[in-house]
Length: 105
Length: 376
Image (cartoon, rainbow over all chains, first blue to last red):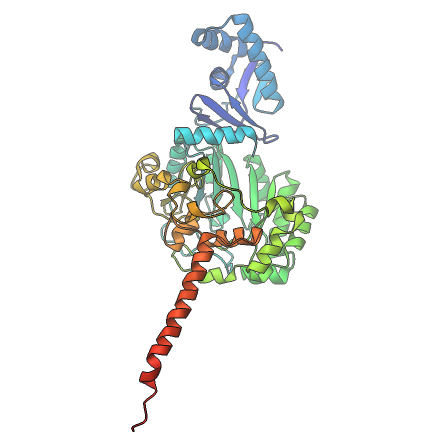
């Protein structure tokens, strides 16, 4: 995957924060996901206007004790997996519309 | 339930989060089902802004599953505004409806808003039975058309078949109909007392013999031997379990803003028109009382042979007069499954026998008084 891609939350999902985790259900196939604290930071930062590598560099590596290369690898895998279930949208261009949800707490 | 869902439920319980809420948007209805527990008059439903505010509060409180029910939800002119607002807040929305007002356009809108599932009541595959229960001629046809429209949109539909005296022989037909339509099927053999306390509609409940037959239908319950297995011996841990999720990780809000532990547990716990939802959820004395109850606190049920496998509903127990008491309808189910009477059924039987003895004794005592002794 190209880390310069933009990541946006799909509107075809249900999501709610549960403690420090994010509970997400795919609208595409009703698969339920639980994102851990790190993945939740990526989720919350996926505004469609920021690239994945920017999120990793400025959010993940700032908040957690992790090497950039390792964090990028894990973030790529997460974004690809969630995109397969229609939870994330990926694009080489910034998204033109606001990401889903009035509330992303 | 998936392992992840169980984990989420356990976490919600630990954190005191209301994971599931049922919100009834209206009690008005375009059907008049013989077994319905509601008063269909409008006594002052929440307005659109009030419901939006409530939805904001529910999202803030951590609600994930939001079931919108009624009454008939599509009778509200602002139904799609409310649904759109709820989906924008990322709730996993489930709808309960009779679907009479769902045509192609509504089905398309429901799909575009990303609703998780739609549960539709179907009482029989025969119009003369279904329509007699809803008291609306043509209602089965309209509901089935709606199911086809929803399926054409690829939506998940569940046919809910409430069993009662009028339709007890029809569930195999409804099940076959659901299979033909490509939708899920669920039965419910419980008639709920009216919310105002009137228990007269319980006379529509299917009898013990029918219940026994339903519980032995492999097509419904799977492994009959396992489903109807004798009760397991309880250990100390079994007595510490929570009797139900009502008030723990789930609750109910009426169209008038009243908060209850569950739609089937009408214990008034606060009103969102007067108090913020989270304050009610966290501090209501009624909800906290419900939360304090463990199985060991149930005087009769904790000593009952069915304590481990019983489906006891605390709401039905409450409507019977005591939220710590037994729910007789669930006692009947345990009896139908296993042939072993619950503590409650045994005690009712012994009370009945005692009553008979008292009457007999009274007859004996009073006989001389009502039979004048002839004068010597």
